[in-house]
Amino acid sequence: MFSEKKTKQSSGNEEQNRIASGTVITGEVSAKGCFRIEGTLKGHLNTPGKVVISDGGFIDGTLECGSADIEGKFTGKLVVTDVLSLRKTAQIEGEVVAGKLAIEPGAVFNATCEMGKQVKTLKKEDEKRSA
Image (cartoon, rainbow, N blue to C red):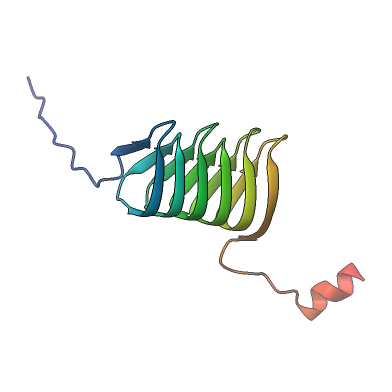
């Protein structure tokens, strides 16, 4: 009786893109939505959305995204503004910059890692306490 129809405005991040198993893409990919990688991407992927690399999926290159959930393989530079989750089957090699990092036991993580944007410096008083 008093219900109103509300329209949901799409920001583009709800859209799901998929690279299927057996597919190999070489080059630069940019999108507003999320990605599920089941095949292979050699190059650069840039999206503000979430990227899932499935078990069997592989990225060789650069990945810049909002968040990532990795079960497959990644080699190269990985920049995640929010949370990077590595599942037990994940294999990461290269350079990682992430806001937050979660790693399950069993994941292979052979990378340099930088988290957050600020590094806390010790004050003289803190140095005296730790000595």
